[in-house]
Image 1 (cartoon, rainbow, N blue to C red):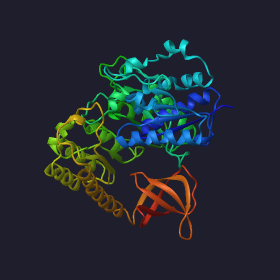
Image 2: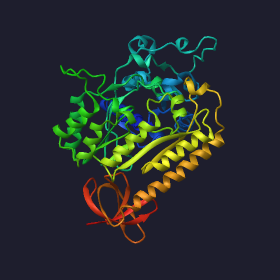
Image 3: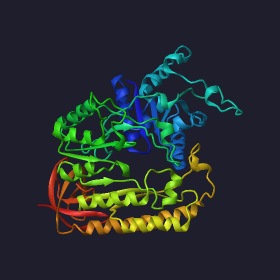
Image 4: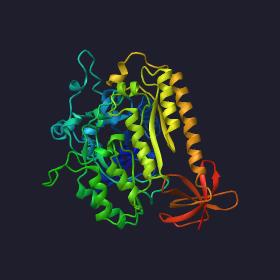
Length: 469
């Protein structure tokens, strides 16, 4: 029987797309191989948020082609949407299918895998001739390279959605993508140009997905999106005078399903409304966890980034969240080395992070993305300077996280047990995650996918150590 393998790179949205691609193949009777070397069709679902992400995808193509030269290698995802010719030129690539055609990926791949002549199929697939993809003045790419299926992403309204599970924790904490695309135009970000306009999964479909996962026994669900707080703005309001907004979705999930715990992934600062904060703080069924992208604490840098808030707006939101939820995890994305970032501007960011009650950070070094305004800005920062600033913020984040963890020693916390059971020094431990997003090693062997209250005994190797009450 024909086999396939999907390898995902990058964010949760990409992983959700990969899960939907797997469903496409399974619905057509293919079996999922355990590794790419055993698959007839290998799909690389790529990220392009940094140059390193592009490099990882190219290296994967070469590795898989070397180990499995007979495999049909299909490259899809954000890198495929952004630079299809570049990928098509890599030896071993059979076809490049952009995000614009990802919803038909299995159909396209199987047509090629079965040896069909694509000449009669191009119209139905929306195939884009290479001459339309190569800018004027550049040589067209070799006809020997695999065909490219890419079209204008902004013309597409499809939204792939399938639950995603952590590789190590496949029976706990499914992640459901409910929104894709972005209407913001941050000067450093290529994502709107490879994922298209903001679009939302309809409310009724989300509720069906949630109910299905609950029926399957899951105790915590994570909802995510590219710009999650914009969910609903593109949907018809069903006769209401006001469009649906994110708060409507959260209320509907709480009132119309029996979900035990709902976790909200990243939401932009200005979408953390008073109503949303009140909703999260007021329900024991919503995890006390707020991820609020910052990027920079400098007003001048935020303006160059085309971010839609000022440092004082951001500070106000974080202080409101902390006041409403004293024990919540509060995290942020931060970027170092944005073009023109002076030492003074970096210090403004460092000081703001030091002042605010963050419990963790995701710190990124700026990476110029072709086609973005920031890529051609003056005063690009030397990479060694940007990396040193990254290190300073990571060290600060470590100290803040450790202080947060220490505050719970001797207290009780809610945790969900994961399915990874490891051997400790002289006894078994069960991996767990607290309601407020702290990893824990729970003494003893415990059933997976259960919420329970535990006592925090101490900290070791970046994790809480706990015992069942």
